[in-house]
Image 1 (tube, rainbow, N blue to C red):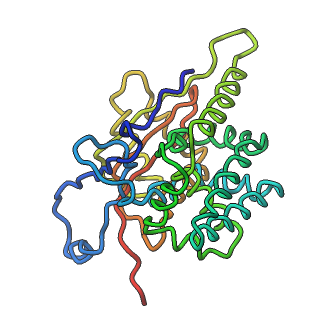
Image 2 (tube, rainbow, N blue to C red; image 1 turned 30 degrees about the vertical axis):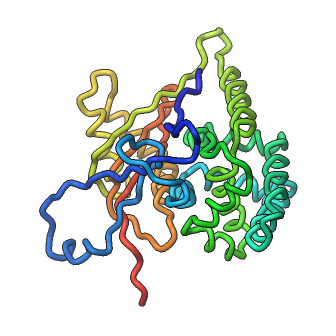
Length: 307
């Protein structure tokens, strides 16, 4: 299988295009109207728009990546391995040091390189990709610049200070991985993981030499459903109920039989600091053979109200 699910980035790697989906102006009850001013559209990845340009320093890659499902999955794998956990903690300290002393950026570069040179980490990435193919999409580099320029862009990220304030190990690991994927990936990192993924996909050949299992992505845009199992089924109905090649009832049965998986994915996708999910506006479905997986999820959210 070719890995052609690529980012659309500018040729110089220094600009990107945030896309914010429009929400249809439907009539709502008075209670919903009272919440409108607190609602925010959680933007899709910034590489997909083609109509406006923004400096990477003006957008938050942490915002775009922190809530992705693959970050949650990979974080758990890193936390259970002593060596990887230590590498993540060292990177965290390097990030804090580099904020105070720009000359310490080289230690971040070295730490990222060491992370991707670990066969254990690369294998963790491969296993995570099998659960959420979005990993390779987000790993593709956003920058073609030196470390100091990356660090300057990272320091302008509105969520970076909150990452540095984390004290719990799982939150530190999650924050470090988000920063690595958003700001410190390069071609070597991407190639290391993509080659390992391709090798793993080749192993999916069946004993009778049938073709390897392929992944097919279906995008379900411009929807307005609740962030739960019923909302998921409603979104799937939009795409598959009238599809002659799919059995919608059978799809619903698969959702019900794997309810805990889908509930976890829906919950993880909306896990943004200070935000409460309200409506899903876009869903990316990944078919692994005949198995249904969830990819990217965009949603409308509202900010938590301080008591």
